[in-house]
Image (cartoon, helix red, strand yellow):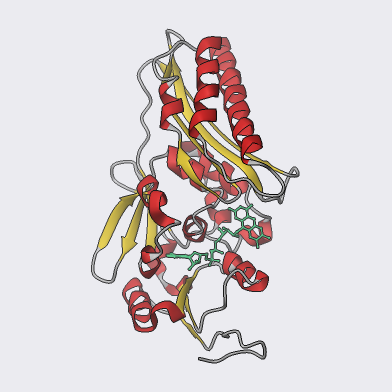
Length: 302
Ligand SMILES: Cc1cc2nc3c(=O)[nH]c(=O)nc-3n(C[C@H](O)[C@H](O)[C@H](O)COP(=O)(O)OP(=O)(O)OC[C@H]3O[C@@H](n4cnc5c(N)ncnc54)[C@H](O)[C@@H]3O)c2cc1C
């Protein structure tokens, strides 16, 4: 393996496979010496900061056409190729209208020049990407290719172990599937994505929240989904907190219950800038404030 003057490995080959099968074959051939690269924006930061060594072999996924596709399936599901850039997700008119939190999450990530290179696949594979809470409330399903078959795996399930076991890094993420969302009859839907950072824009997240649901004609919460992440916290759904709202009246009692539910269920990682406790309370405050606004707005519309 080639090395630089400091003895660190340097990239000796960049491969440009033309399809998923070839990409997977190259990965199998070189094992841990080879890394898939999409936009390269995260990898480059990791190499420059010393978090990871540059690999001997880079497998550039740009020429794999099927990974750039963004289509609506026959059952109304959306299929977003892993190589779709964050900019394209953000600007896509149909995604904006059907799954607005995807565009909203992409808008909050980095700056336009980075979003033009960075991909949704790379953001997912980072395990802590800011798009993940939005994908979680939309019940995203990942399509992984292992060289022979393509397996579908719910995003929430993969996130449960992704940070602990690196076996998935041998597989190729082809696309992410977002099933068609349904709204309970006679209900008014709402959807919110919020990223709190240490400044207004171009900032790492402290807390990210995605929230969807609806309010029925009797003023009761329906189909509430809450996902939280931010910083180095692996995002997850907060089902116990959701249960405090579903079918309950939209009043101070249910908001108080969900606030306490989030404090109990959310386990963020703290760092030198923001403690775990600060992040937990921030998440609970955002959710309650957004639910309050949604309840008021939807009641006024009736
Ligand atoms: C200045 C700056 C600001 C940033 N701000 C943010 C931010 O606000 N929020 C945020 O979430 N991120 C941020 N990032 C991180 C990064 O830009 C995003 O996470 C981006 O979406 C990563 O996508 P990429 O295509 O560049 O991934 P890459 O860097 O190419 O890859 C990232 C990882 O994913 C793996 N990978 C990529 N594609 C696949 C695939 N199809 N199958 C399997 N593995 C794959 C790679 O092997 C690598 O481990 C920032 C980065 C920079 C440089």
